[in-house]
Image 1 (tube, rainbow, N blue to C red):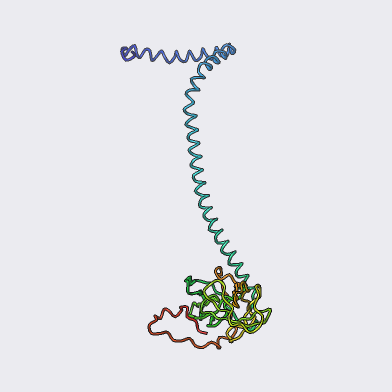
Image 2: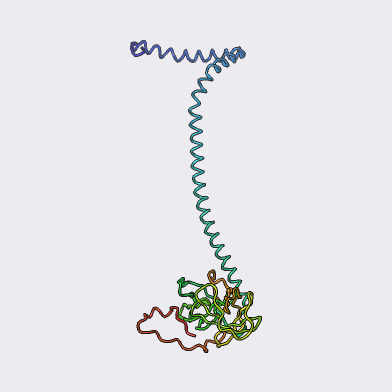
Length: 296
């Protein structure tokens, strides 16, 4: 409608409107000063009328603020969860390392229980391979000729005799376990002093054979090395008799052979009593030099 007015009339309205607004403002200020009670009552009524409208208009802003706050909370939770996941993985790694070190520490402490004679020397080695076959009972350790390991040395744990070194490389050696079919250890029944041969048969319990004349071994008798043959010293603990049948006794080794991780290879200075190893047959490959052969 203002656009339809003539330019002169429109200019006149613009010249008058500003003074009128100033006059209205001055009147309202004067009324507010002269009649504060009535003016405040008017203002309260205006506020009561405008409040619902303002409340409705403010709800979208409140909802938007709440949504933004929740989004920030979700982002914080995601970041915290990711950080906790990383920390949990690190803690699990530390836990596994602690458990492994605890197990190794316990086994190394067990090795200290069986102290070799002062005149002997020894090397502590870790088992790095197990034959795992049905016909061979031997393990490979990570110490060899460069570490002072020699053929014929006794392999022991803190519980007792495990076997003896049969083959030696520069950085590794093979230990024939007392349960192997090729293992023959001169032993003695500690209670009766009766001598016998502890012979493996690839089972968990080697046999006692070739008894001397005397009383039959009884269940629970302690078996130790006799020192005959000059390969192993006397008195090394081997195991206890767990079964006797038809003159044949079975021995349970003191050392848990399936759970051993470390071995102490002890040099009692008796390796010279062993004969030199036989040369390999032409049909065998050179990489079979650490096979399960035994030279007594």
